[in-house]
Image 1 (tube, rainbow, N blue to C red):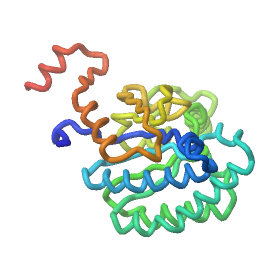
Image 2: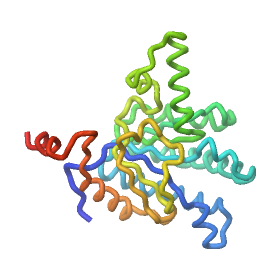
Image 3: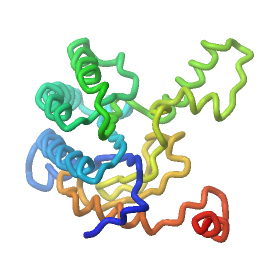
Image 4: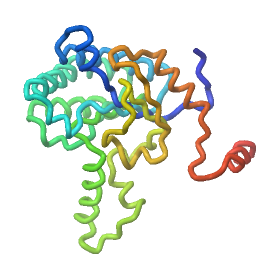
Length: 243
């Protein structure tokens, strides 16, 4: 598939859904699905680099995911740590900047140290920005932005969109142009609620471990055919494009 050169998203947000169901269909433990999902992410990141995508934000672990069985949470934490230990040097070689967003203080010190080391190693890289959302929720993000504002300006702080936007996670990069969720579910699930206000939403039935560059390109092609009006009408957009 030939991708359009002049209408690709700059920033893509992804919910990588369907790992557990993928494993269950194959009679495997759920963690096997998460491991396969990590492989799918690795391939997709390579593809994102090849098409010069500016930023990708993936939802790896939500605040609600703590409600899962203890053994699954423990195995996910172990998978996070092992993947950081094995993948970061390769990300660095490909000029990828790795960042984490969410309430990170909920994690143990070993994982926090690995997060800090990986962010520090890749901080000066100028290629793809790969944001990993862990212990994240969109509602938490809005609350923490409000709290920052009050901490800085006191009880008389002026709450405006501009003020809150500056204190939200990912405030230093463009908001997502395209949101992709795999696995057949059609909801945002408390993900980047503020940042997705004008994002194009694309839902795929493919379970995440089976998601490939071909599926990704189909979403990009769909996005290229969208008319993004941001409250305007079609005639205004066409006139702007002509001029």
